Image (tube, rainbow, N blue to C red; front, top):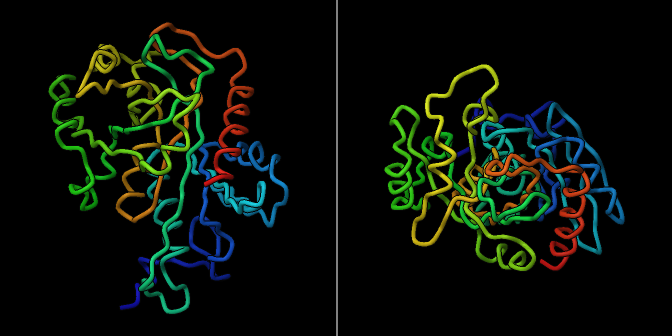
Length: 289
């Protein structure tokens, strides 16, 4: 059955609605970043660049690094954007744009997030690198899909109880990284459990003028332990990437430049340099995948 035009939306030039890409423009190895300007920060290291497309917050460049064809795409901030990006990346490789039908033979992408994050553990210092072994989503994205089969339900219930989290805040979902991709980043990186928040201020325990409903949430998260797994850092995309990637049959891993330590109140003196070091290290490893 062909997908309806209202569900699978194409632009007049035949490109996918938000990303403005056509299938042959996407590599099977994809690096995602939040900031559109960070795309150039990565592709400046490429040997060649095939093309550049920029629509809204979605900036894509495809090229090669040490013979490896790679696409770099900015998602913007938050899992609402991740829902758009992951579904459209999948459509680019697994839906026939001519017939609007799902292909019989599906393609699996390697998706590597490179982003910034804040640690909530004192022993994870600023300017270090962390790979997200597990991700916890405090948004509700995965609950809109049939996702029970990929979720770590015991972890989720244990966390919900420990945090004394009101049900109106929603039930956190827990998803693991792809083990094969994770294995490429097991050296020189902290391994951790990353919380994906649905905001930057209140949801991450920051107070400017608005009081918090749960002012001790970060402290409770920092003290949580489930089968020797502790929560290590906070950011805003990883859980959505992990969840949708697993549901769609793709492999995903998230790499975090720790630019803040919420437990000590420190912030990196040069976060751009830290991110650039992570980019160079990640590209060298990605080239071998």
